[in-house]
Image (cartoon, one colour):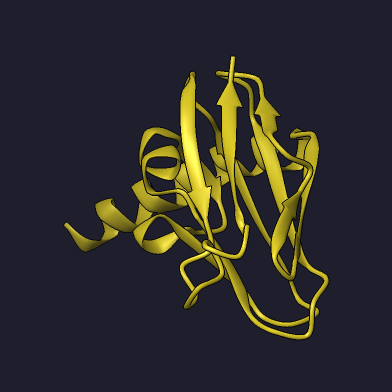
Length: 123
């Protein structure tokens, strides 16, 4: 049973690798206290690598629970619908988004209130 599960996981990883390698990249900059570009516009049903770059000296996150829950994540991770990006760091998530209108905010104390929020439109 373990060998069958291991083989299934390996097959899924190999199948996802080509999708992640050929997915176009969409860069999202995190600055104090905004996201750029605004709004974020993506195409439904097409693999896309979201490249999150924190260009500030403090930590930020990209919290979009319903967006990540409805998307099929191929590579990277967004545990709890959140991508945490340390100061000066970069994180990438490759996914296939589903059509919709999604809210985004930084969950750090007062960051959203100071303007760190936007929308994702997937058509």
